[in-house]
Length: 172
Image (tube, rainbow, N blue to C red):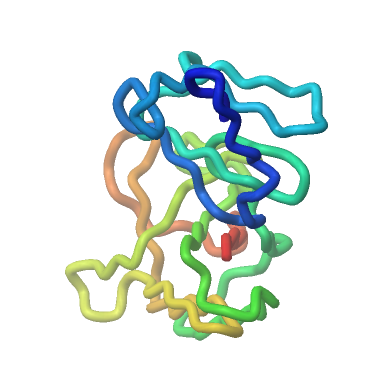
């Protein structure tokens, strides 16, 4: 960082350590740019919104959420089942996204459309899904049906399981 002629070497920051911009200054000294010594890259902080994260990753500085460290392939959906998929992160993920990906047009959704799923139970005791994770697996427990809001009529409907696939993304 350069502030008032002083330079803080960003290379001294360990890989994975976050830098977060808060307010208009960093370190209270009117810091306006970040530069890694020995490298040509200069990042003007005026372009980074308040609260936006910067993270040193390897030999570069990146802003925002990094790419997921685990992405499953498309996995078929079964009713009344437990799907357990190893994520190989070696720790409980800090963030998990489980999506339904449309593979056959249904309810106004096109092939390739994705719906972000949460831990949801329907009014009937066995409708819905539970999403969990541990240091080894991402787990999806499904009931007799999975309901979504229809894109075409805005009414809830149970999906045709064969027309959708699970996809899981996780960050360490």
